[in-house]
Amino acid sequence: MNPEENVEVGCPWCSELISLRVECIEPEQEYIEDCPVCCAPMLVRVEVPPEGFVQVDVEREGG
Ligand SMILES: [Zn+2]
Image (cartoon, rainbow, N blue to C red; front, side):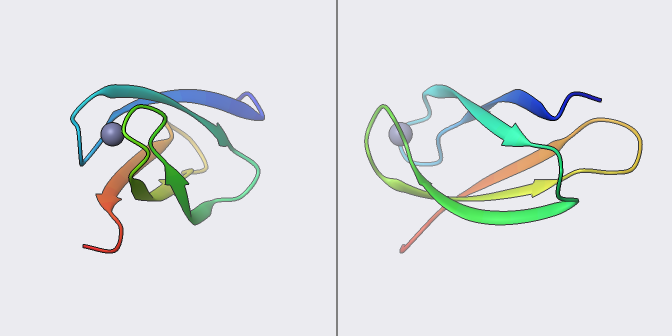
């Protein structure tokens, strides 16, 4: 597995497809990132299973 992966997600605010760079070093992460398109804050949840694909969930933050 790569140490970093690019994952495409749909922004929960503007629905634009955006590419997030995810570090696969930590099995679980949660952080806030601003959408590069509409600048709204998204809560990003990353799960990196021991095998398989990185899973990324995005939610509206602050709503
Ligand atoms: Zn957006």
